[in-house]
Each structure stands twice: as C-alpha cells, then as structure tokens.
Amino acid sequence: MSILDHDNDRSDRKLREPDALDPERILPGAGDSKGKARRLLGSLPVVTFVLFLLILAITGLVWSASHWKEGVTVRKVVVSGTNILSRKEMERPLQVFIGRRLDKVDPDEIRSALGSEPLIREMQISKELNGIVRVRIAERQPLAATLYQGVRMIIDTDGVLVPDNGISARFHRLPVVYGISGAVPAGGGLLHMNSEEYRILALILDAFSGSGYAALLLSEIHLSSANQSWFAASGSSIRFIIGNEGNFKEKLKKFEIFWQKVVAKKGFDCYSSVDLRFREKVFATEPVAAPPAPAQPSSKADKSAGQVLTR
Image (cartoon, rainbow, N blue to C red):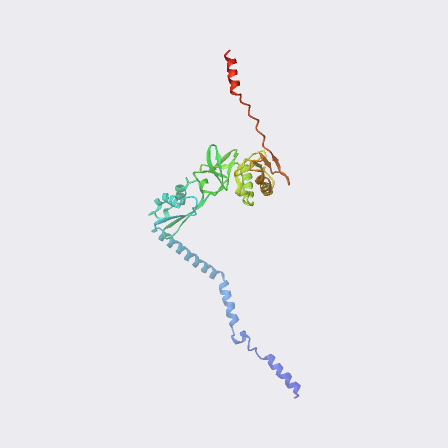
C-alpha cells in the first residue's frame, strides 16, 4: 500500500468516527426528552389543569382577603393634596368614619361630606387593609379675580367662578378681570364663564405668562365682545387695547417696547389709549384736555350784582 492510500484511509476513518463534541452523541436521547417535554406541556388537558389551579388559588386569596377585611375597622382618615385649603379643616368632617368597618365605608359618603367645598376640583379615595382611608384632593387653581354680579369671585383654570373668601389676597399679582357678560351652571352650585370669553381670557393670560416683564405690570383686564378687550398696567390709566384675536404674544412685545421707550420717559398717563392690534404699528391717543373752568366773579362784582338784584 502506498503512502497516499494510507493517508486516504485515515481520513475516511475520521469522517466515519462520531464527533466527540456533538451533544446528541454524548447524551443519547437528550433531544428526545426535550421533545417529550414540549409535547407534554403543549397538550390541551395539561394547560387546562394549570389554569384551573391558578384560578382556584386566586379565588382562594380573594375569599380570604374579603373575609379578613370584614374584621378591619377604620382607624385613621388622611387627607393630602391641599395647598389653599386647610388639611385639618378637611379631615374634621371625616372623623365620623373612624371605627366603622372598612368594607362599609362608601366613597360617595366621603364625597358628600366634602362636597360643599367649592375649591375641591376632584377627589381620589382609597381604602387600605391596615385601616387607613386616604383622600387625595385636587384643588382648583386661581387664574384671576373678578367681580360678578356684585360678588367677589375667583376664576380658576377651567373657567369656573368660585367665591373669593379671601383667596385672592393669598396670591400675589392676581389680575382682576372685568366685562364678564354671563355665566352658566357648572354643577355643585358653581358657575362657568361664557366659553368664548373664557377662551379669549385664557389666551391673553397665557401670553402674559410667557412674556418678559409685561406680567409684572399687569393690573386688570377688560373683556369686550367688539374686539376691544384691553388691559391696564399698575400705576397707569392708559388703556392698552389688545383685542380678541391674533398673536397676543407679539402684541405684548410691542407693549414692552412702547413702555420702555415712551411711557417710562413721558409719564404713566401720557396717553389715554394705546392700540396694539395692528401689525408692526402702535397707535397712541393723547388724553383730551379738560375744558377751562369758568372765571369766578370778583367780590366787587358780587356786590354790584347783589345791588342790581335788590332793586
């Protein structure tokens, strides 16, 4: 046999020898066991049985928790989320629930106990198995103050009118709004501004909130349905006409420039009105001069007039 034939025979034997690294060769039947497990778990009766056990366990837990909760009583009521309202004042009417069985506490009863407070926008009530009832309050956020039908009110961020009750005094630089033509019932004895007037007011106040220092000067806003809405700055009697539409932010930029270059130099009452509604232009109206007062007669003339009248 030649050397070439001998080498070919050795290579043929290597090809016929099992691969020492093949796991199927080392562990015969390993692939078959995996396949059996997959077939076993994939069968419908086994899956059904497993699901039945899970449902049975969950049902048992729910039953145990419900029976355990029947013996739990309310030991504390916690109110959170208050900023304007007093937390203690809100918790006081809820003390009647302490000692009551937890499962007998109706969330609607809690809402009724606090329902007379107009500053509450919404409530979230949760009952914990340790006997604590939590009441999370979301308050109405003041946007402006107003005088509606002779009553001082607060306008919140939803356009709802809420009795002031000293709230405006707690907020610095809360603008006063005039010209509200009407309001509609909003539920709970509250009123809601006319939707169109509130839309205009919200746009104007949003522009002020994003301005440089115009918001620091804002004193009051007068709404008008004839595209004549205007505002006044603190310490000035000038009417700055801003209208009911358009880019309010651009109008406020013109106001800030005019205030710096004109009003600050000529005086806070140098004009009666400044119209900001026109693009790239500002129209200012000077105040009308008051007519001169009639001259008073002299004392001699009074005496002669008196003499004439007595004749």
